[in-house]
Image (cartoon, rainbow, N blue to C red; front, top):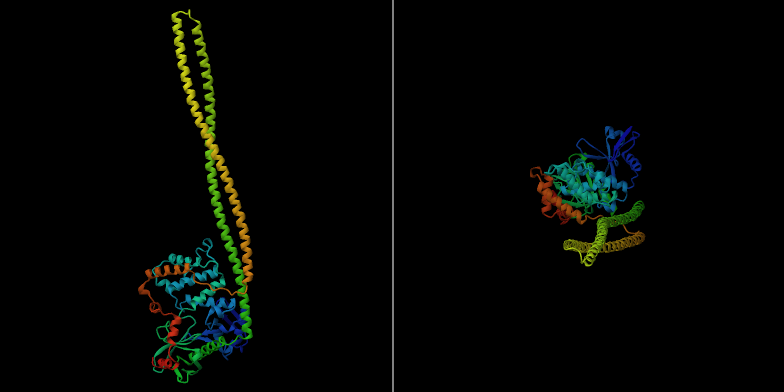
Length: 554
């Protein structure tokens, strides 16, 4: 018969014998997907009550599942205590990331607004890499990356949400896909509802409460508060789990504490709780034992993979740094080149002006020369008249007076021309001084440009030598640091500042009448300084007996 199993990536169809069991289907699927960390996963379907029924440990065959055999889901069943330490393979990381992201979007895990925006930016970094405006503008579809509750609770339009997500996306520059997915999970694992499977139960007094099964132990919640547990029993305090019909019994290691019981919704619920409880308890114990050969091999492989990634990332960062430095130097050189071109254009304008001045000077010199020649001619004529006047003593008075008048006019003409020559000579002298000054400035500018060009060439050569040496040092450091582990990504100061800005904006645009019950509880916890792990520490205080009695008296 045909068996259909849906993963977070695709739908798989198998032909199986009627007597094939769920565990065999799981093994086949794990093999096809190349998953070695098989202890986290299981195959389940939803029963009529909406509960998750896991089949991989069941003795039932595919034939007994009937129609449910075509509606199976491959899911994360058990969660690590610390994702960064326990998830070793990329394929496991991808399945976790996709499932958790889906739970965030579907609001199966409560996530406050600022964290939701941060997670959306990491999801985009994991999918597209570094933000490039021309390529990625228009890629953010809000329903795909933000829970509807977060959008509904704020007086913000789509463009404002996209701007906030983009501003955070930009801060993740240089984070690769694996790092972005891991950072996403590291943030989510600090959320109160992460990794918790809830079941409605009642204690002996008939009080309705919720049982939460987690990697750390069993939590007891008030019926309308899934965020803040009231009581916790860590796996280290639990000895045995068993049930009979709806009655579920927990045996504690503390001999002073008697077994305590609660009632489930149905015998099927009791079986599901037992299945999840035993599985989580076994993993809790497994984490605290030396690695098996299989686990040691996986861990060694993961270490080698991370070392290789570290070297690749260091090399990429070196190349990126060199590229940024080169671009910076190129921009500086271009700026200086543009300045030189501007200066050269200005000098060319000055040179053209100087050439016009030289041309004008030449014309003035020619004019001056002509004026001097004319002055000499007029002087000669005056001298000739004076000679005639001396020689013509016997000349009649009228003629003599006429010659004297002509001599006087000629003398005035000579004086006028002489003054004109002197004036032109002064103008020419000034023009010559201007030309000499222009030539001096031109020579000085030429010398300065040659010095600047030599300086630029020297800086370029020196930078190339420094860059070659830096790359060489970087390669040596890569080899020396080959035994280092991949560093964790920290929320940098720029991102923290961006989160503060976003939180202020969310506070200003919040719709009070749209606030969900979880949002109110979260806000109260935040105001009281409580978080997931502080709450766990607080509710574990006191001995086991006191907490068991507290549960019975709820």
